[in-house]
Amino acid sequence: MSSSRKNKLLLIIILCTPIVVMALSSTMFKTGFLVPSTTTNRGILLQPELSIEKLNINNGSLWLNKQVDPHWSIVIIPTNKCMEQCEQALYLTRQVHIALGKEANRIQRILLNTQINPLQTELKNQHPRLNYLPSQPGHLDPLAKLIKHNFPEDNVGIFLVDPLGNIIMQYSAKQNGQDLLKDIKHLLKISLIG
Image (cartoon, rainbow, N blue to C red; front, side, top):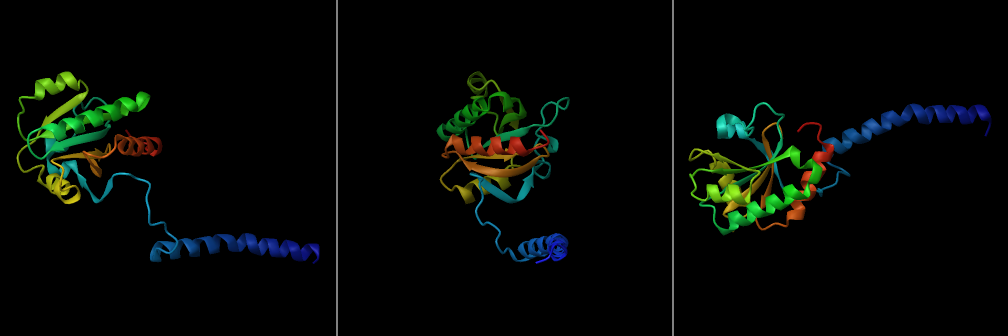
């Protein structure tokens, strides 16, 4: 094969490559062909995600201090009084928060509850970086339904909320803390906000 023929063949390959890539990616997008069916997240990805604003919790915001940038949030929601399983969830999320090390300042932990809890003072002593937000009855009903649907034996839910206020993932209170930690580390690594 002559040099000019090789050059023409190479030019055709170079020009056709973007067309083939675009055709293949369009086919994958429209048909799902060759798209992986498994994910690497360990929590349940909420589709479509819920919005804190739509739930009208704290006037549609989890940001307790408007002077600082929004954070990622680990939100703990008991479906009834904060009893043993709730305390386990608080302990688990505290350990995850500590394990984040230098990235811990990008995360806030929030306990949402509809009841003024007499344990609140005790919880503040055990969990000094835990924020407590009271909520109106009925505001947490969509999340309580998710807890009962995805984890029927749980009476507390752990949710991951992005800095824009979207509730994106749910975890069981019985789940391994490493699951939550790995997902948060991954999200913090790829996130440009919070």
